Length: 484
Image (cartoon, rainbow, N blue to C red; front, side):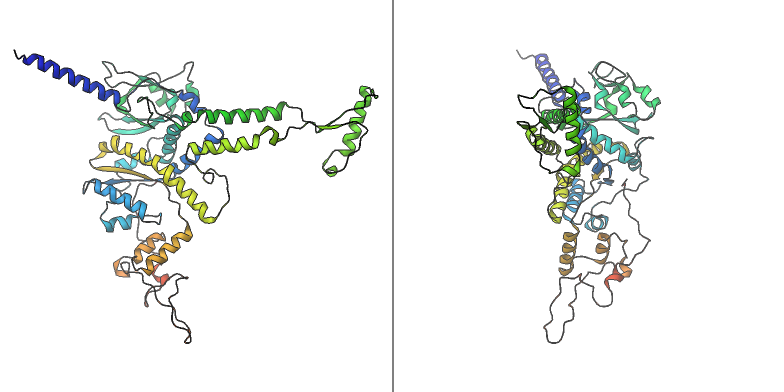
């Protein structure tokens, strides 16, 4: 006999299983930490510091903009991404965006722009981004506390150091769970991080209390096994970092504790000098052969042998291992030697290519991750169809830029105002010829030679408007964005 209640119970059981499965597979849920984030945070030294700081500095000086994508939706995002990657000039693209139909940035007085520029009373937007990237690279997890007002809208934002946050599982009072900021324990010491949450009053309000997950914005580098924790480069390369630390410790101990005489002179078997005679001989030897002025002089002694005692860096292999581990740690974070302040030489073009690779493959993906999370969790509080974009400062070869400009002028595909925008100048407008196409002209040649087109110098405009006139300054134009 058909039983409707049995079928209903089976469906309810299936739904509960599906909910439990989605919860288990969902990222951002609180749970026990897989790695020791306090120990990871303490590794912010040496080459790890150099690598992470290079990324954080780029995040600090990145530009932030908010767009309204209510028209065309995701198409606007694709168009802006196309303009960012294919414009080729690494400068402001508001002029290109407006002419191509892409949305322009919202003004600075917009509420979302304001909180991105000033997330809390003690931090600027630049310092806030620096701290977010720092936690993400060190621990694989960045926890942002979006402090709400009485209406649930975020009014302040703080980065909670992962090392002092303790996950709290879901309960009847907290269906989603949360995190507590530990005051002190055998593993964490809040004094180390007491300045991270701004004023002491704000810190005292959250110490030992549970912050609901609904107020937290968690960004992670995904862990291959543990959904409730992130996989940091520091944890992934722990052995490389530990090896580098051990080599540094060994070198320091060798310099600090090891005896470092240059040579030892032994007496013959028939000689039996006293201590006073040995000290007198050593003083005479140092006086005669010591000092920089005696470098390279020949030494003749009556002893049977002269033995070198100094352990050279080559023998201890400090130099090779130091460079190898340095390169391994920098590669762990995707930082080339040029970006880390290590001049590897090479051509002028290779220098810019290395920096551009650093921006494109390391810095911008990190910023895109932060921007996507802000768009998903923060932007909906300030309106619909708002998109946050964080863009790193572009690095371009000036010689390559000039060549591309010359090519665009010869192809007659660039306007006067577009050229001025690339030069960092305000637009002239249609009345002053801003919409005119920049055209090359033939350079006059002697009568005996046939006229040829000169591409080696900067092409000029058609007669009646010189290049200097096209690029003259005007101060009545402003660009609007949320750059910090």
